[in-house]
Image 1 (cartoon, helix red, strand yellow):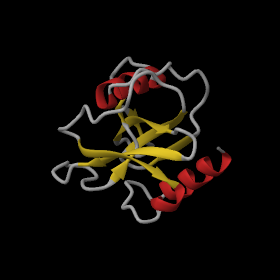
Image 2 (tube, rainbow, N blue to C red):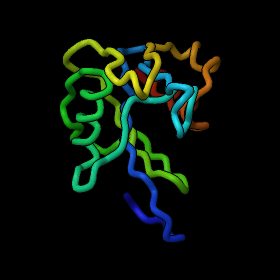
Image 3 (spheres, rainbow, N blue to C red):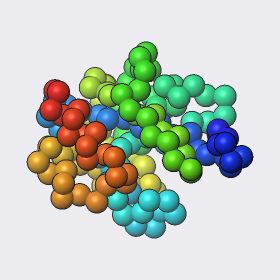
Length: 139
């Protein structure tokens, strides 16, 4: 957890922009979720106390998608800061295993999307569409 200038505690979140070239993998958050229900989001989760964010990302991807990734060595491709959370997002384009929905209590679906499909989705954060479009255009 981190503390804002107002003294409130914000969650520390890590997420993966999981790309296989011209597609991104998104997870649909179950409608019963307390935070951000019924939206498409990046795979990831909370950083545990004492855990490094990049290591948390590798752990979360194994837990949520059943894939193994190397702990990212470089800086995140994007950061999002709100009153409720600080999120770091890393580009992941190499992994072992096939992504599956291994966190049925969190997501009711996972799917690959191309750039032209993203505008039709209800995304978890307003900045996602521009970030996804820019990242996929570079690939």
